[in-house]
Image 1 (cartoon, rainbow, N blue to C red):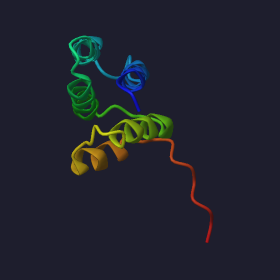
Image 2: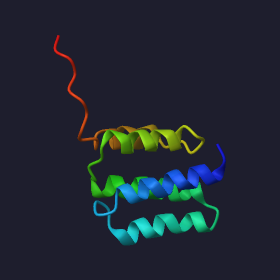
Image 3: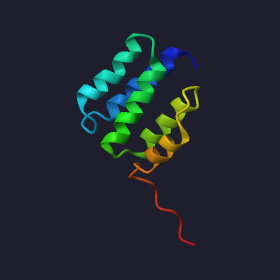
Amino acid sequence: MNMTEIERKISLLAQSFSGKVEQCQIDFAIEYIRYGESRLAFETLCEYICEANADMNLEDFKLILSISYSGFELDPLILIYLAKLVRDVPNSPSA
């Protein structure tokens, strides 16, 4: 996956959290992309999401995983914390 695709995904993720994370924090994180620091942009954005305890949907979390598995690995503890912020997990089937 080329950097342009990763940058697009990080920007899409940032848009998803507009209104859930302070806009100045989102802008600050995304600014790193302009300086060729996409990894730092992603890590910073994820830290801000955690700090804000921002609810997310399953698609947001899948996007985070996609970016992380594309070579921008997050600390496993951060991924666990982010997973706990997912609020629309489908109901599991009855046993």
